[in-house]
Image 1 (cartoon, rainbow, N blue to C red):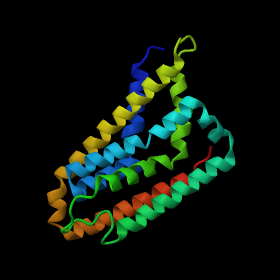
Image 2 (image 1 turned 90 degrees about the vertical axis):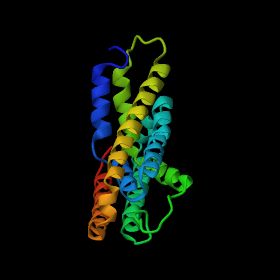
Image 3 (image 1 turned 120 degrees about the vertical axis):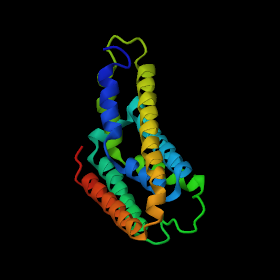
Image 4 (image 1 turned 30 degrees about the vertical axis):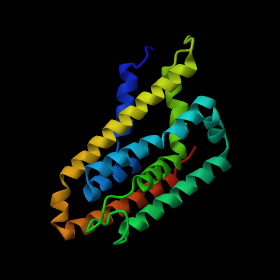
Length: 205
């Protein structure tokens, strides 16, 4: 199968574009803090993929796939973090506060975004099960090919998330002039984090 085949690009795009925690986080950042913060959110979520890429490349994802205990520990840590994000989202002084607030520090955005993807064991298994399908058994440098495919996946993640965030930022003025809309958005994002946490809690290896 040729490198960067249409099948790989199309499948990756479907996975990246599907609504998930990172996309919701980036959209929320764009709506409440603007284009700069949404871009930082997209970057931080993308950086959160690096540990999973490293796990897949080094074979650590195999341990995650085989060990129910390791998988469950990471899974429930991710569930707890998503529930915490939902709680913080509902707070007036939480991540979705906009009134009179300066842009959030880059460090805080990077930590939150990385944690969102870091505590998702399904992402490691995705890399472990998905990427090898696009590496030929006759490839003289399979490790390099895995790294390249992973970097392409990360680039697609950043671009799609950034577009989500920039679109949300364009809608920001409409949100700020309607406090009731902001309230419902805050509740909607919180509910989305809870739903994603529930889906992760029910995930099997």
